[in-house]
Amino acid sequence: MKRKIGLLYGGKSAEHKVSMQTALAVTKALNYDKFEIHPIYITEEGEWIKGAQLNAPAENVKALEFTSNTLPSPEFSPTVFKAEEGPLDVIFPLLHGPNGEDGTVQGMLELLNLPYVGNGVLASSAGMDKIIMKNIFAQAGLAQVNYLSFIRSEWDRDQDNAYDQVENDLGYPCFVKPANLGSSVGISKCSSRTELVEAFKEAFQFDRKIIIEQGVTAREIEIGVLGNDDAECSVAGEIVPKKDFYDYKAKYEDGDTGLVIPAEITTEQYETLKELAIKAYKALDCSGLVRADFFLTSDGKFLINEVNTMPGFTPFSMFPLMWKHTGVEYPQLIERLVDLAIERHKEKQKIKYTF
Image (cartoon, rainbow, N blue to C red):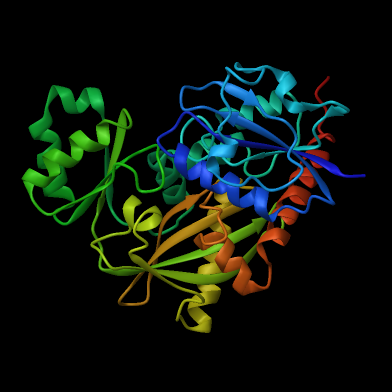
């Protein structure tokens, strides 16, 4: 019997377009002899629209952009998670950024007691909020770059004090980022007070909290983690930006970045990297998948940058590419994640909720 998968994509987020590309790639990779594919689209305005079952890969992104004028269920209802023959077997949230990758959708799926791919509520929310994530990593003893954080109201009250703090505690260069966003949206590299002022304004457009990280001269090394309680790691990869840093345009538009897979690191460094990645995975109580991003300094020290609980997931994204070089092809990776989702859901059914 075919497994019924609900593909959940789009979303009310600045990363909506990234999610659409991910969904398109997944529809092309799934085995239609094994799975029934039920698309569930969330518009940029937050409308939930269930499309007709897919019997073949979507031709393009436009084919996945349903409108409430032509299809039913323009607002959220638990019925979007049902096929004609009954409930969907597993939900695959292909959502990036707030309102999807941050624990909100995961919490809803928990309340509905539905199996879903990827991280749970805690890991998703903590992994999305860079400030909370870094605080947890610090508690776990993972080395990181120095950082500061601000909320918009603090900055509004005394902007000069915020800039003074950054200059005194971190210096230049530094990176200013929205706390709750991915895909390098709203990130700026600063080398002066003038650039810092503009960077604060830019980042606060996308979040009420921002984080400022000390610049470091280092290589950018990433590794994929896959599994539930017994997680395993892929080969490592290296990001080689041709610009100052790996921004949104370099990631998704102009391809102005080199990816080296496997990364040229020693066996000892790779073993250390795996150990640190699993430590971070467990610190956030992750499940399913993450891409763990590190800096490798000139003296051979790894500093954890962040983990991404729903990393870029097209066949050309770093996470699937690292697993491909590890021996797991893209369609196999998707099937493995579905199996992990069902495994975790079965494990949760053992929990006693009455006393």
